[in-house]
Length: 113
Image (cartoon, rainbow, N blue to C red; front, side):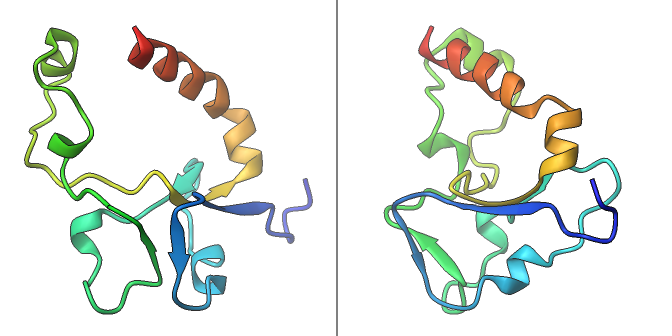
């Protein structure tokens, strides 16, 4: 990869409404070793969001089934702020080095079980 060239993607779910220029998101500074960046839903100002998902949840209670033992064992507080997995910027080189896709597939399979 050419170190002087951004090798990034901006991922937007199909239920995202873009309300501004996403160039700022593309240009966000990623720390060394970080494969992606996203904002906590609770950090986003309600009237100045660049992107917004329809029916967006802001806590893990809206995403996880806390009746399941496996979910409770994760130790995630249900009232903690979640993040919007439908909006993020990723460094493709770092994504590949860390095998993020394989990790996501593993967690998706666990989620189905």
